[in-house]
Image 1 (tube, rainbow, N blue to C red):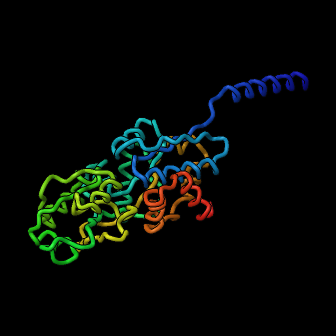
Image 2 (image 1 turned 30 degrees about the vertical axis):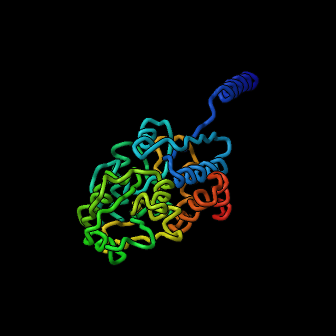
Length: 295
């Protein structure tokens, strides 16, 4: 009888071995938008997962496109995760008013992602996005003051460049024109960050609408116009991940949670500067960040 049971166990073990050998390895696909910051974050997350999840294949599907393109890839399971800020989630994805209270906004975003798309919003990474208007250090002669109210009340007709995803949002461009009453000489130019700030530097545009973590906002020759009505609130950035991926892959949530709180606005801006201003590879910058963060 012992021999019979032993034979059965050996056969079963051999069958399991064959199944394991023939099964596909686990795969996690990391996505990103086509901006410098998103490329860096994608590389950071991918390198973190490669270290923390040995045996899992980590795919990089970076520079997919704009917000809705990457969100669509997440919905269809073409990717498993990417980084989004709460302001963009409400303004571009949910098409809802952004709650004034930051805690409420974070909670509602998490609920909406889960209810609408079976997606999980991870804990904030630590840095924030805030809509900022950047001008040249020396303003036009007919504009007095360094705030947006002065820019609007001056009557000056501005040439504006603005990041692609910010143009259609009520909490950014619409607030700028309706609440601050900025006059425009022409329709705003929708631009990527690097050409937008190059155009500002050369005088092809007079104002650039971007994010507070952009590499260029604190560079010589530029100034941030003060948001004196406090219309543009800083919004936390978080990893958004498919809930099914978290359920399927033990250790994924823990590996992603380890990145929570490891960033600040200044750290993110300096990472962007390493790529945009010093022309370093995002993957190289990502590995240095992980080492400095003790990950």
